[in-house]
Image (tube, rainbow, N blue to C red; front, side, top):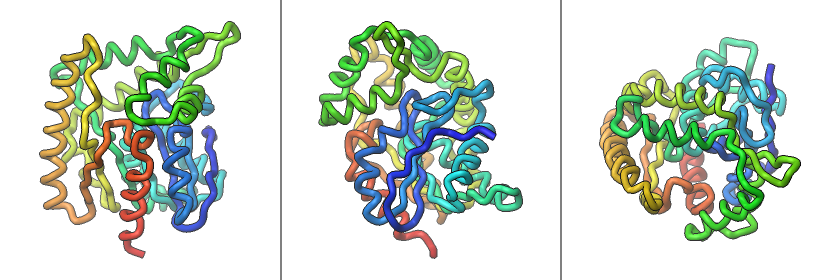
Length: 292
């Protein structure tokens, strides 16, 4: 059994479990959680190898889902709506997929529904996928300068994220080193496991991936793309092409799968930090509409 680091934000009402994105931590949810506790009980979890959770030698979907289930059991959570951003969104869907099996096991930590906030991925053969993977692996477990935190704060300032909140989130997502430098998370080995898992899901395509998930799902896409970074013009085209394909598949699913709700939010991919109130509103309305 591996227990992950979790933070109980408190609140009263339907239970929510919040999962963060790749290379981030549960602290990204602080602003949204502050709004969600008005009508929900809110618990956030650091994924394996992220934030203050222990690392893992086997970063696979089944392992991560099991670790989350064990952690929820330890916190006395029998059932929850699992809400995830980016990588966490994919995990939230996979957690929902396994809930029917979990009901027949010794673990009572079941998903009632899942919310996926812009958590979609491409297959390894998608044009440009190899280049993205190389970039992610190169930055995984890297040692950064003492000014790393300030750089991260400056990077998200154009999105209107307050400096104090951005600094707290940046510090929580990296490991401080004795000499004042920082080490990014997860490790390279864990990042490779994440990529393998993501490519396995992405290769299926969204429609086939969601086969067999019969619990209610809210699938949310970002309404705006991230600004193009210098030297990364190719990624803007890559991302636009992929997002359009996802949008087309989601439109079809919303017409044919009554348990699937599709939405778009006026924010970029980092929506839970950029637009915490809008995210909280989407989640609240979705949970309020679930069958009793």
